[in-house]
Length: 147
Image 1 (cartoon, rainbow, N blue to C red):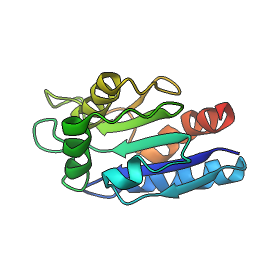
Image 2 (image 1 turned 135 degrees about the horizontal axis):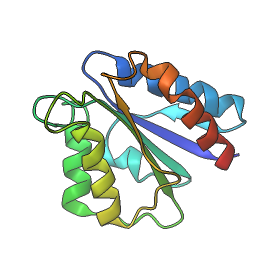
Image 3 (image 1 turned 90 degrees about the vertical axis):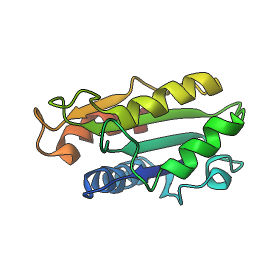
Image 4 (image 1 turned 135 degrees about the vertical axis):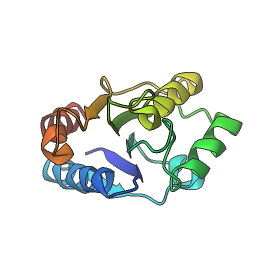
């Protein structure tokens, strides 16, 4: 059993719905999965195996307001989290210049932190997939199986 913490950044609720589905799928696979308060203390808490970011993108490729403080805190301190892995689900719209910028910023930050990804990030394009919950199901199920 793995301990999974899910951090959500959303504006219209799509990333939240993906996170709720992730929590259910991980639980069905026998893992302890919870949606966490997006604060650094929660992110660096001991005993966590996987840190999952589910985020939409706002403005010009920006991270949603509810995840900005976590991102800034991590960027400013670059905590080392040996033995842990991360995963990213980034939602966006490819008709914008900075497509899925919220998720891509976390991917770059995790690389800078030396935090390995458990699998390739999932980038969901609203122009191609109108239902991000359905679009993320197989990816999340695969991730749960790797833990």
